[in-house]
Image 1 (tube, one colour):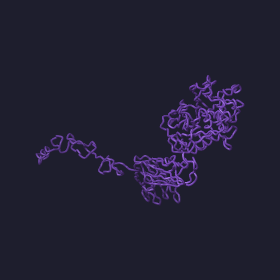
Image 2 (cartoon, helix red, strand yellow):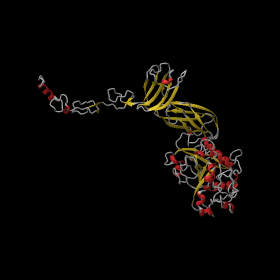
Image 3 (cartoon, one colour):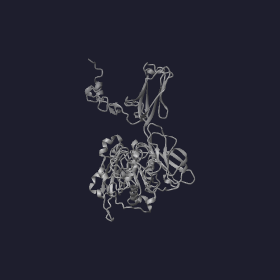
Image 4 (cartoon, one colour):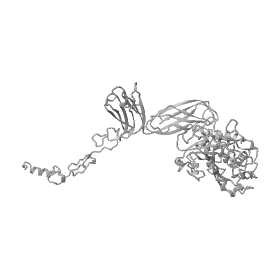
Length: 640
């Protein structure tokens, strides 16, 4: 498997108080994967910008780490408090880029297997136990209980929805500082792992899989990874499902260069004379160029293909050397020492159950029911054996469930409750968890969680057709009020006994035409029938028997606005409430012969005297008393 890398570094300020040069370089390591069949195409171009763009500074490419920092702490287990920020696109928990807690836990577990070289795991190999571990933190920035996972919808941040995050702010996507400022916890107390949707617009496929930084005081400090290369279970790509990208990037975070750093030729391998200052500046990693395969012989014969900091495929990586271990631990003792001096990995309370999130309800479409479920976390030190969950809909309807089992410290479980009937419109569900075992919950602030949602104006519609023995004659259709086709069925096959056919769809508010056709013209005269049901299972319309060539029904979903006055020009017999739209047509001009004082819409029918207005005998344009007097004077006059 080919992994390409691009890196950027910036020389920070020289700390003159030190007795030797200490340059801290911000180094972005962009780990890039391609399938193995691309070896011949990309192999010759596997270079890192970091290794080629700073030629004049190669003699001072050191991290400012003191030599041989071997204190009495060198033998202890160093635990790094870790928080995982899932920066998703608004999907429900567990879907798409909003990955599950199980996937997060698998990533931290695999990271510990690699760093501790645990026997019987993928991390056991040729290397050494670094005696460095990672814990998902138990305390957040305010000292409150947490499971060490945050979830943030960043779809509204410019560029993130389409291209994800920029790597080092030099590619496509959202501004790295803007994204990380939304979620980052203090770098002095936490290792921030940012799990993102895309990097540089790569659609979470090939290209940059992750990047990280050498220690520097900036919100960007930490490790950034694609969601589908993080962990060993869950939503992952087949060629990045051993979590080795995270292991590699954490190596950079703790001060490791690539094993092939500044080694770009066979002669460079052969002529390395000072392992402290050349190559990756680690003396027990042999000089090597970048390697991309576990089976192809390396260009530099002594290369260590199993090293996590090379570019070989995930299957053969299993090694941190003793020298790399010393460098990483020295980085912790000097530039990241504050990580070792927090209590973030210690639970706040002995007994503490909390609701971490609500899986359901989400917004409901085309259903009359909500099926609540919540994520319950044991934030305490003691295991939880029994607790209850209650859900209250709109402060009226309540469902609850009692859970029995053993929920260990730091573990979580999704709890499902019975369904709640939900009407259309906005709603609020209030959840609560109650400790039922011995003792009391010592941190009540996380015992409640509220979730608002909306049942959208969509009605579930089911059409059930049972043709008679002449099923080939039967067809049907459902159209909207403008005769736009929505769904239909038939003709069917003649069978004995007859089959029953069912189709469903979701309908927005409005009225619809449902028609059943019989090609012979005798309806369903030989058995059978039809029904249309709403979301509650109630029968909207039904029919059977001889309905001729066609049976027509009008179905109306939800409130139907319209004019409810039958004498109006726009009367709507299907309206369920009057929307004030009623109008009468007529002549609105008061000087016209046919002026209508009750009309609200002029229909162009006005007639005036110049158009032989009946009754206007003096052609004045009005029918008035003078016309009556004129009529009386001619009354009885013979007509010629």
